[in-house]
Length: 424
Image (tube, rainbow, N blue to C red):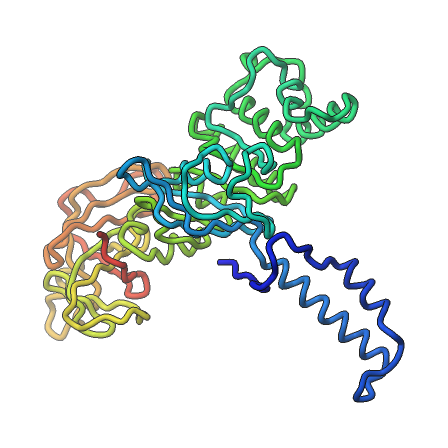
């Protein structure tokens, strides 16, 4: 999260630039200070202070939303949302249908009214500004191209007021950037879906927007085109260093494209973090189940690092939650972190045999699902009183040596078990 380094600065007040600081340093008198510091030290101190100020200002978010609330009658769609967007950050608003992410984007865009809360952009209150004055670029799911205009004219549409030669040069620059310079005289109907979305992206970028807003821009495309455009949009965002907010319900899009994923549920932000942190350390059952797949077990905390699930005390990694022993908790583990092996029945039953580890339980293979590069196993764990999903890399040839009904052993590594906030 971004924190204001100078909360007392008046909204709209000019921020000191590096040039301002250099002028200020150059105007210092060439004399020592009151305690005898030489002129060089005075200048050095001023330069250091200036560098610190610039670094602090760089940490201030470009866009700041506070207490954003939207209701339709008695239904609350957004409930006091606070969100910061960094100056070059790619942020994905992720969540199920009806969670409020598109409404939030429309409020940022300026096309949704009747909401509570405030929006500040670069220190200015833009809450009541109309969409045209915000200078944001928007790309919609439906492309919204004019069918009677050529590719070139579609991109030029947002550049009214610029002379024709400069307008054409800017359009060609953007179309070259998205790989469509050879299609300038075509009409939208003559382009594929992926090409039309590239035109919409070029049109949004042409006026040099202060912020780029993407409303599920890839959902209407087939899987292969979608994957290619993900990479293309991310490349353009990084090359142009333009702050971007994208709405999506596709977790893979969010994880592969964003610097930060903002996960929403029922009009609230439930977790926001880097994609790897959201996946590896989900804060709640909802986050764990919505992003990727997760085995979730409910049990009783029997010690600082032990949870009783069914008949088994599972060891978990030390945690920072303040929980009372005996309280109900939920723990989770990703399917790819579950270890599955054959059970060695003769050795386990032999006199003096080593007792299997606490987190290893007997399982029966109930179902096998081939998923291409990986294979999903559905395992019944009677001592846990539940089922476990395990994900294995598909072996060469695609055939597992195990069949349905096989009696196996599954290990749930303690470092892979995550304590989760209980849902609801």
